[in-house]
Length: 213
Image 1 (cartoon, one colour):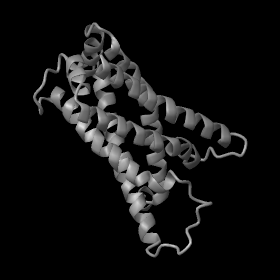
Image 2 (spheres, rainbow, N blue to C red; image 1 turned 90 degrees about the horizontal axis):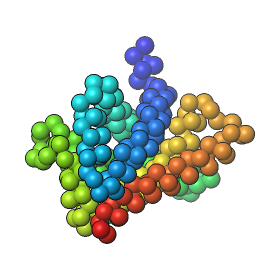
Image 3 (cartoon, rainbow, N blue to C red; image 1 turned 60 degrees about the vertical axis):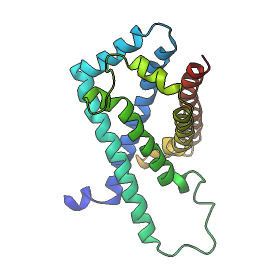
Image 4 (tube, rainbow, N blue to C red; image 1 turned 30 degrees about the horizontal axis):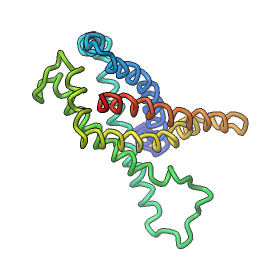
């Protein structure tokens, strides 16, 4: 049993499921973030308070954090295993079999991971009491952060990288789960590209509008 749980195939399957779970979460997060554009902070703060105190959300929160950890750690392990399997780089790389984005998934993933640490420090850790801040007014916390040019630049760059990461991981997850078919794969790739453009774009719009105000 341990042999199967530790196999690269099992890691890829779990990583694909974790990736799809995160793909479903991002639109929900984006929908809540759009409340930051309201002049009234109450709707966003109410949503943040609800997410922080409703027991179902708390369970979901733990699952989400575990998913992040699994997706990132196993992604790193799989990449290291691939490097060890091919210790000597090919003199002429076979670019036809490896997409541009898939070659840099490990690096885009690490950049996103660094951004998540910063993001958690500014929001999630405040809720836990590990970092100073007002957990009942995340609306103000977000607006203050987006007024800082350096933070805004890091935020926009991180979501640009996320778009590149999503453009490959969306259809790759379906492929790993065995849903690879000549008839449906092109459609999945198109849907993945649309998702990878519009989700980061939505996250782009919110801080830019707040900054320009």
